[in-house]
Amino acid sequence: MSTPTFSPSAAAAASATAPTPALNPNPVEIDPDYEALPPTAGPIAHMIAGALAGITEHTVIPYTSTYQAFSRITSTEGARALWRGVSSVVVGAGPAHALYFATYEQCKAVAMRLSKAEDERNIAPMWAAAAGATATVVQDAIMNPFDVIKQRMQAYSGSQYSSLAHCARSVLKNEGVRAFYISYPTTLSMSIPFQSVHFAVYEAVSASLNPSRNYDPKSHIVAGAMAGALASAVTTPLDVAKTLLQTKGEVTDVEIRQARGMRDAMRLVWQREGASGFWKGLTPRVLSHMPATAVCWTTYEFFKSFLGDREQAARDAKEMSKSA
Image 1 (cartoon, rainbow, N blue to C red):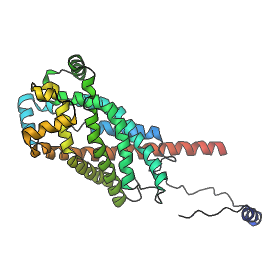
Image 2 (cartoon, rainbow, N blue to C red):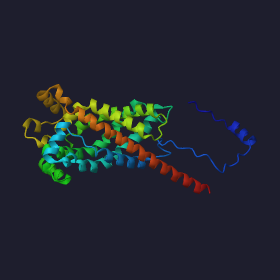
Image 3 (cartoon, rainbow, N blue to C red):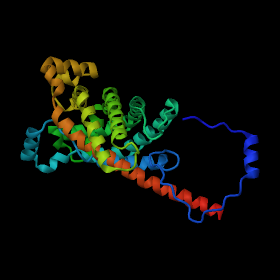
Image 4 (cartoon, one colour):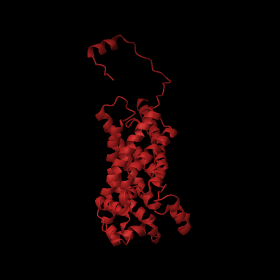
């Protein structure tokens, strides 16, 4: 898009000859683009929308197998056990997702300026991937301890914990603070590729289904589900290694308990289960991430649009009071 050249002499001549426009008592109200960062939704709106989206998403809790897992859990511990550990995730998901989406939106705005995109409503997948990778570093720093607690409470022996606080105290007492972050490098090694694919696919599908980027639940659901499915599928081997590290304190196997990081975890999976071990839980992982990411994105886009409209209305009222 070319930028017109400003000429002071031409402007002066035009202002001298042009009649003064009459004020329109009923101006046409332009519907603001809710995706645009400055005019509608600011960082606070992104943080609130992100917190609500994260809490909503993480009430959908995945497990490690499909029919067998559900049958075993419900028969031995009752259906209520399927939601064990959700309290840990809900507590951490709010602040983590608040910073996550706010960071992404800020990085996205910077990426749009750096890429000099002609379409300000849609970002190139490569830039979306970079923004998503940056956001997940911030999110995981907050979320990792809560994820460890969730994994412990959802493990088969997790029924020994009566509450989130009980589990946290037990892990801290028996294994120290390091236990809450031992899987952080592994989590990042999984989260960065996951979120890179996730955001790139979401932005690409959204640009195809909803190029105007108006609030459209159907396109948000489809784009979110597709992004979650593809991202979760390609990162399943990394998730297997992360889960092994996060639950090693619950097993008696000495070699597993001594695993120090991703390399040890991957080696143990390969030695004991071969290549098929890296794809354990693929189906439930994809099936859990599809609705979770669809719900997360739809919730986020709704509150982002709602809060953005309210912020815009407040700014308009303020401008009108100044001009009155």
